[in-house]
Length: 231
Ligand code: CTP
Ligand code: CA
Image (cartoon, rainbow, N blue to C red; front, side, top):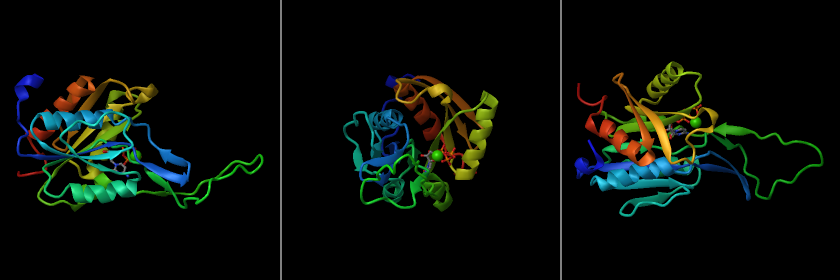
């Protein structure tokens, strides 16, 4: 359907979108972070809002404008994201994790700026952060809310991309995974994108074009049915 014919099809639903990228501080002026402008997440939040949903946006260092009419919670680190998501998913129908969450955090954050020590390098000790999506997937019952993850992968070919996606989807116990091929610096910060939405029911739907258009296509697929519900 065209954007115009979708109307208010998400009226009465609560949609949670996380967008941007989390950052883990090393010291007061440096961080470990991810390349994510938040454009895709914002496009999803805007599309869901336009289609009548109540939208909760969990926003991590985004670089693009936030649509009006959405409830916003700002987070910095993956630990903060985890906390904010726990609250945001209460009573939600659909949760879309478009955020690029930092996988590792420094074992220690220096209170003062880390200084160069003559010619030597620097070794950092990192710890894994909580996998928020996997935690949400493991913690829900009755297949609610519908869970959608994103995965930016660098794969040698489309088959390998799907294979990576299928195992990630299963590992996270989510319903849908939006796959992005980011080989060669494609996608990040750009206007357009190309995605494959894979479902835990074995389905795969491709979409390409503006992030706005892809956002609507993604919502079409994931709002139509929840592969883990009923049956
Ligand atoms: N994600 C999350 N919490 C994390 C890391 C990732 O919730 N600590 C979510 C992302 O928001 C995304 C999905 O999990 O929706 C997949 O993220 P991705 O980075 O592709 O998966 P990882 O399990 O971190 O695997 P990889 O080693 O490939 O980065
Ligand atoms: Ca990751």
